[in-house]
Length: 229
Image (cartoon, rainbow, N blue to C red; front, side):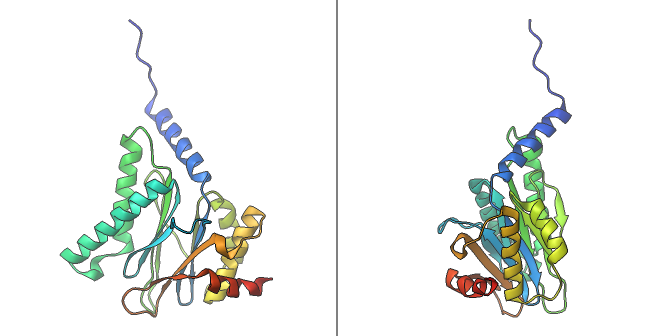
């Protein structure tokens, strides 16, 4: 009788991690950056119909890199979680921290128990009231959470983007300065010119009452980025 094929748990986890990293590396990058009036989310996305950035709740946004179908399912699950918690308790009880913890548990369980891990990396962002710190969490393919400060990047060129922003980012940027910096970072990481029509941009604006999320149109982007020529 032949012996069954055996793979050690350590090797299995390493193989899963390598598989997930390769899938995420194929995806285009996303930058989230804090600026004076809120949080800026910028994604390389040539598709006009498939969004990588979206609203989750009043002051919370979501961004996903990697396999679209997988992070889209996570986005929908996050909206259901937020709506149910807000209805059962109160809208103020829905926070980026609680949502990031829920995502971490879900993604971590899939990584540990399923044959195929999720090929995704996500960001959960919450803009705070005036005078309070905003929140920015990165959840990796294995469910680990990173509490980021100032800026974060995910996707294929994430490490190059982080190195660029580490030297260039500064507190108190206005919206135009933050958007131009994010665009320059993407261009430096890819060694190619970024066209406004290939960007998906949204803002969580601190001063807005109620829903703070709004998208920046390609026409607005064209006007803002024209100053970088």
